[in-house]
Length: 64
Image (tube, rainbow, N blue to C red; front, side):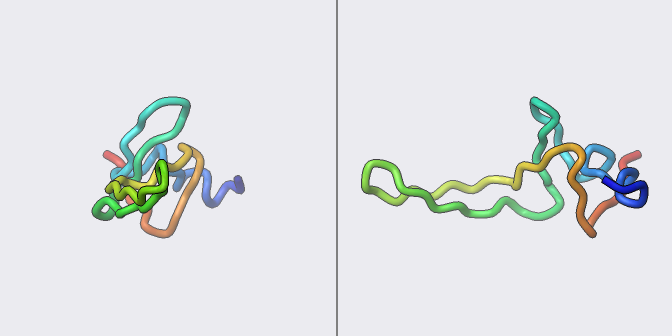
């Protein structure tokens, strides 16, 4: 990661909810619906995107 994006990483964002293994949920927007197949049935689940702490995006807002 370059210096410009290092200080804008997910782990420093106000919308990031840390979980385990340096990953967390991005809570910037509402949960997204995900469809997946289980035992020949399509299941739906709503979830927040999971990101690594050193990921980054253009919606960054510094945490207090």
